[in-house]
Length: 427
Image (tube, rainbow, N blue to C red; front, side, top):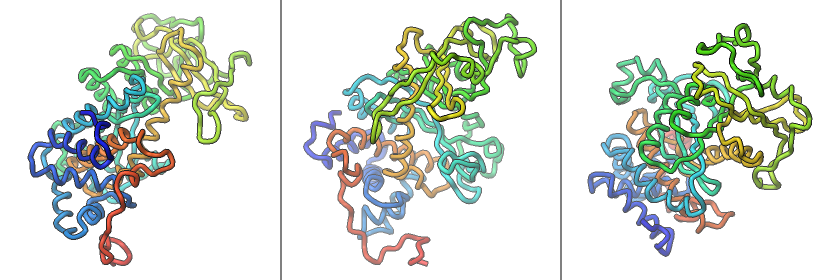
């Protein structure tokens, strides 16, 4: 579907929704689909159902509220089918600026109160930077240097939730949904992307995923290269060293049976001054982003000493000027011949997922869903990704200084006496 063939943003949006409507199932869902996506892109602080109902149908807010609520929380349409249609329409637009270069694994958190929202528990929430009552979703995005698009999205269901039959039933958690760690969910998404034939890219991940050697090994088995953030205490064999205990994995420390193992921090501190270079990787808002980097060929410790997992790979280290010690470490199976600057560029391309999360939450209300159920949580996220996909396809038509949502739809005329539930005035 050629969205760019339409003359105006409104016409392109209508064409875009028409494409989504083809996989939504029942004809009666087309109008709430259009209204929900419209509400997500209209200006406004909250993108939960009630405020969106007031913005999209100010003369019949109550009826619109019921329609949108049923559509997102109860209607049995397929998230996979809608996301597939989004990919079909948006990926060609992204690839006009170049092929897909990376797949990015990450997760995002949504602070919540109470204990009844599906998957909520006290856990680390990146949005607030500490342990907090929240939900966590694991995502996979595809990207090049021009744009990125989430292609998979799944709620992390903590072990306590997975075993609690009463809460599962109340929240409508599917029978097949079981406890899986976040790296296991990410690997399932990667395997699905391979089977679906998505354009392949180098897998990028932060230390929460990169420290998992089984995940890295599985990517190698899938013939995917990676640039994986790791913690400073990750153990490797330094340049020129090999495992001594053939056929057996190291013990917990690795020091007794594998004396040549070192932490990546020890390797970094032992490098000569000549190993460090200042490298620029991207133009920022004010100036080029630059830092000091070093790279060496090492062998990373794995849970099993299969020769295929003990090939040399890159250890990339960042040590900014003014810092007392290195701040970031990556392991990478990108080719040995790759240029230093290109290796740094791949590692730093993870910033696109941070942009995804920022815009999904600030522009289209990814974190504003107020329901408690499994289906509603995923339906809302799917529609947010659909709205975001349209904004991605519109980027070339919107001035850089303009707000993307406001550039497409004007602010609606909400009735003067409308007050959202819970507001001080309504109380």
